[in-house]
Amino acid sequence: MEDAVLQTVWQQRQRPVGYRPLSASMDVLVGKTLTKRVKQVASLVDIWEEVIPEPLLGHTALQSFKSGVLTVMVDSSSFRFQLQQLLNGGLVKQLQERCSEPLNKVRLVPGQF
Image (cartoon, rainbow, N blue to C red):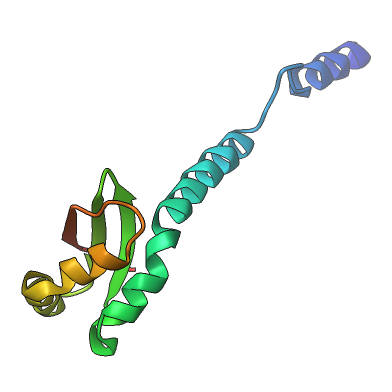
C-alpha cells in the first residue's frame, strides 16, 4: 500500500509535459520591453547629454521616445520648472536640429529613478 501512495505522490509532483515556469515568460516579456525601450531612447541619449546643462542632467532620465514625443522623467518640481523654461527658450529647437528622427514634443513627467 505504501508503494502505491508513494507512486501517486511522485506522479502528482511531476511537471506536466508542456510545463514552463512563469519566470521564463517574465524574462522574455521584460527582455523585449527593455530592449525596445533602449532602442527608442538610445539615439537621443548622447544628444540629450550634450544639450542639457550639467546641473539639470543628473535630475533627468529619458523614459521613452514614441511617435515624435520624447518623454523625460524629472525628479523634482523645481528642476522640472527650470527644464521647462529652457525647453521653451529654444532647447527644443536644438534637440530637433541634432536628432535624426522627427521630434515634435518633449513631455516632462515627475518620477524617481
